[in-house]
Image 1 (spheres, rainbow, N blue to C red):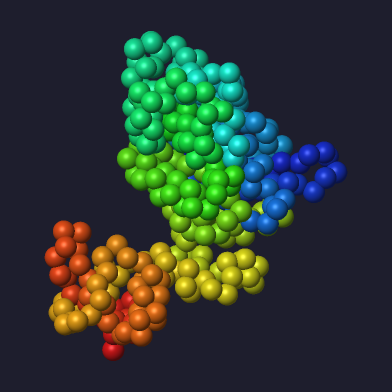
Image 2: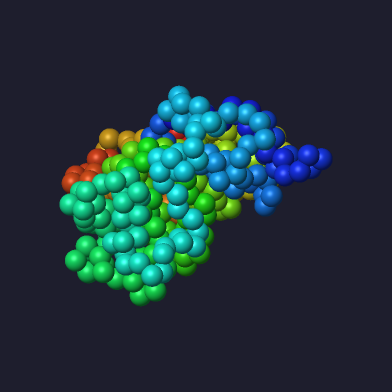
Length: 314
């Protein structure tokens, strides 16, 4: 759990606060996406959590411990940190980069080596192939994977991510987002990430914090923010296609009617309502059959039900 209790940051006594009286509680094991216009204070907020920037006032709690008085170096060993440009040490191998925090924590060589292999496998890099590789021989996506592995190395309860996928091409970025979501399901960390991409915030965040001029404007689940923007700023920020984005959060599983329609095209239960609707519009059909993970026929969904957003069609 992370709690920011009245956090404020001024760069200069007369300056407008970069972050102004921020109150947020981030539940253990969830991902919170910080988003807003440039200069809204999201990166400053992130950097105050690990004390790379010191708050002017307010308190920061990690797992109910006030960390504003802790040694920042000790604190940072409890927090994984992933940045856009990765920041791997160029003169060290992949294994040596990942071993950075375990080495600082005094882990044994055997324990560290086992952790390196475990994490390389977790992020989809074969240990035997990549352990001795130098960073300059990696692709951008591979370097980002190593950066994530390094951030996870000391098994920190908290991870901070500053535009972690921003420097990667769109196809690789989407794949890495999917893989990282899967990793988080397995390792259960409390994650705070900064992004400028609303689609990324919707996809990655269990909750989204929308900021403006250093203040929190709205904090809620992606569905809550898309479904009920608190004011005109948030409504404009999420865009006119927010209803379509909201359909992307939900799968057809919630809309299945029990009977199968002969001759209809099929989709899986994990298909989003948005993708199913696109399929229906593209084909001109009004019905799609739905199959389960094991290929079993479960029933059908209709175009009307998807447009309604819930419940069977009328």
